[in-house]
Image (tube, rainbow, N blue to C red; front, side, top):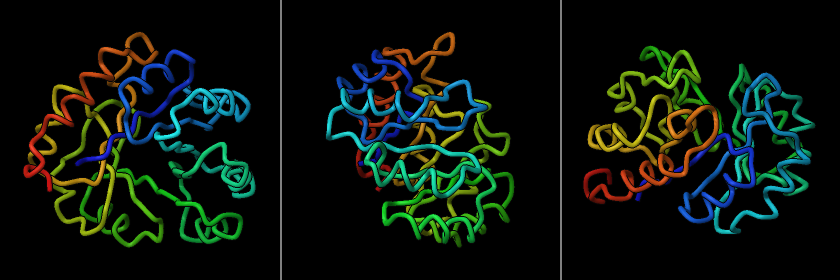
Length: 206
């Protein structure tokens, strides 16, 4: 079954929502320039209210490896997702601080972008729209060349995720802006997205 990640949680209401809908992963954004930014202290408070069955991903943009490693070591997050220009050297540096999973996001415009993603040393890769954070999708057929587990992101919502999963077979799907209304997570949109993924026949996406 395709895994589901709801990214950009910020409020107690968001945690209540995911506890009810039960995605596999949730994401906290630690990039200060993001409108979904939360502090480690806020994340700790939210994690205390989160179902232990839901895995916590921290999203970072060009953050110091020591800071990322500290959040992983303290158990505030269980996985680090890198969304900036972090290269192989950065990933190697981060592994000196932690043995927790490291995910790397790649902005996909061309086949060359796909090849870079395939050869990443990250434990898992995430394929996003070339613009990043625009709520729009890239050409999903580019992902058909990927021969390792990956998350599909960028422009996914309840209205099109089944179409995406009918074309390609990601390990998981990641959504944020398209399950929001007026900048906050919308419980109806979150539930509709999760239902759309889980109602797909298992044999249609592996």
